[in-house]
Length: 124
Image (cartoon, rainbow, N blue to C red; front, side, top):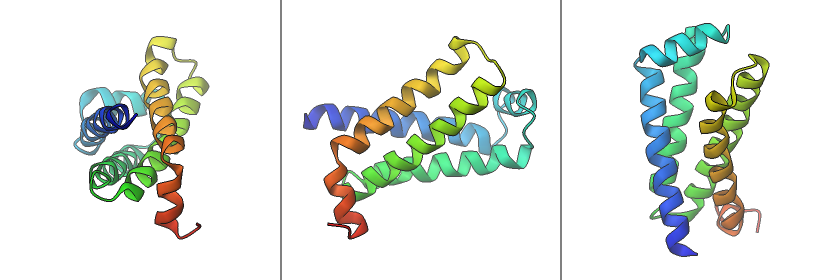
């Protein structure tokens, strides 16, 4: 189970670092996507920052597990926003699938390590 978590955590962090930096620095695909969805470009930058912060929390989570669960939760909620955006725009399943998969991975990680999150937040 531990190896699976490390692999999922690594893949999720890498995917969101790449996606987040692409949004922050205005990669053509992301600029066009936000235009297609009718969202302002400043929101693209904010979304990218949220994704990079979530990925950073996942990376820091290799040393402090509570950060991994917090990052996974943040990215899972962000993925829900992405799914809603794609669904509202009636995008194809091929366009929707990557964020769906990343969201599932984020929530799987979150629920596998929920106990670390309760330690992180002081809820235990």
